[in-house]
Length: 178
Image (cartoon, rainbow, N blue to C red; front, side, top):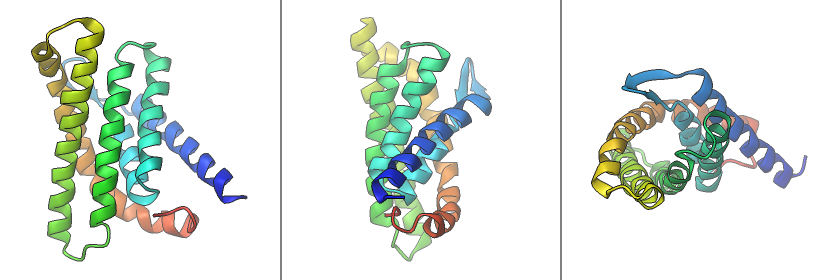
């Protein structure tokens, strides 16, 4: 299989996995809010396949998920927020991947996750929803705090999964890993 075809196929699988985990494993944490376990897929893809693949899987995964569940409601802000999250954590993972000191590497990745999700959810998603729904920014941020906390938790928990799966991904797709 040509490398381009293989890369597109792997990204399509990532999008499908994002949707499947988001739909099938709904863990309630706050009132009417579930953990988005699709973020585990986004993190693994950012870690193993690179920033672009992880961002595409997370962003298009959200678009497809929202279209299946509730149409366009909530999707524009969440999808745009995932672009920022994917770009930031993907860049952080690329910089820290070769680091020897595990504690420093983990600390930097956690800091990047918190910053990325704050930018993606509290700023980009809130601002997009503020513009779309003509609500005050403070109201949108307050409503998105639940998503921020839950998404940060899922991404932090996914860090050991990223390192564990990276070895398998490297064996299966040696030409695609970053």
